[in-house]
Length: 391
Image (cartoon, rainbow, N blue to C red; front, top):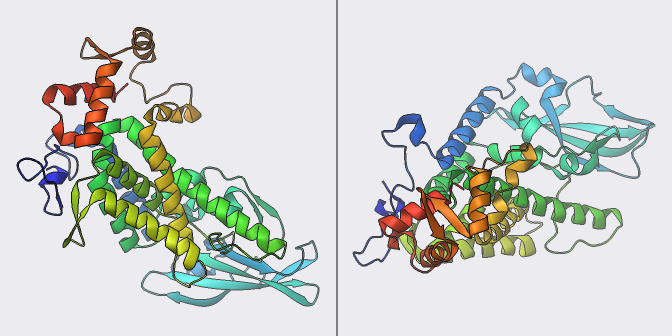
């Protein structure tokens, strides 16, 4: 079933409902081979959440010091070798509170320099997967632990945090958005370029979070007042979730089919482009006016905005997606055949189904999609686009 066959997403085509083919929902009768990149991302997030959920520290595991992760560090002066913490690192921190239903607990250690109290370290219990995968400015860039030792440079967290979620609602909202809008973008880019697009949008979200958080921390260190849009939360604060990538996908969907109508809260009709830019405006509003408001999630909104910026750029410059997986090896899996690409490039044509298609024809099809949406393509144009997206 396509996105435009659903009650909550309708368009105003000639026949009242725009149909764009199978762009969402469960895979068809083709089994595992019919799973799209969107499906695989959703499956990965759900499986990781399930494994992480089973691995949450139980009451017995709370006694294990390794199950506690530093999430906030506040101290006076410079952390040095004369430090000691209480309770010691060989013991779990003092538990401040928690939620028994989710096995989420917060703990604290007091930092001393000699006999003087110089700071407080706050911890949160986390499953192993989340401890190794969450993103923070201190872990990804540079920071210090409660003992004053330097940490940072853990670049894998730019990707791993995108597959972790705080709770079931967090997972459900993100996966629902990806399920609805992801296939629309994947159909335009092709599966491999879509995966690169999605991950890069998440990376952009983490980068903007890091930039605003590091800048806010730097001003604080030098005793300067923070600017409204800078993140004043601790550099150890965890960032998790797929929403940065989802915002990038939403931005791409608004570019590809801006006039499509979605039902906000299943009730309020709204253009897809209007919904997208309204959510971005909300993120900017929170960053500027509610940065210090408890529960405002300014850090999350910064990641949303970064993901949207990535989506805005890469959906307009999809050729930059081809080299993404070069970071993982010499072979670029976003290309079906480098030789085919090279030959087609020399001729100024793309090879599709044994025939050569002029670049001008491809540009015409892409312009038609932007102006009228994917539903306006005929079968020949859809085949050309599908074949070219595999290059």
